[in-house]
Length: 134
Image (cartoon, rainbow, N blue to C red; front, side, top):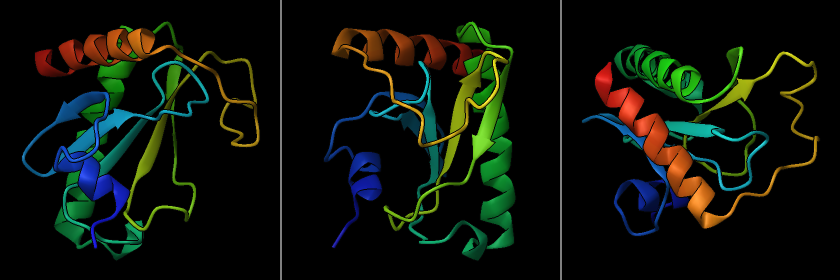
């Protein structure tokens, strides 16, 4: 049975895609801490990040470096925070969160923000346009 992230990668479940290459996929978190909060995943299904083979692991971090640059260019943030958080989805993933520099922004117990579908689409399109420039 395919997990939710595999279904997103395969297009069976819609997502707000911000970046993709042949091995990795990045999309907006639908329950974000900040506008632009992105999840990045390898297309290969491996439950635990540190169980990825060395090539996939290092490739994921090269991919998220590029996604992070696109996030920083397209959002009004000072930096992009990275968090490996949660065991709720059995598919290795990282969170990339635009940070304003106000402290405690990567606390996953913080209230989440609400965005309309149009706001999600505009945000995703903006990040994607920056990603393909890189």
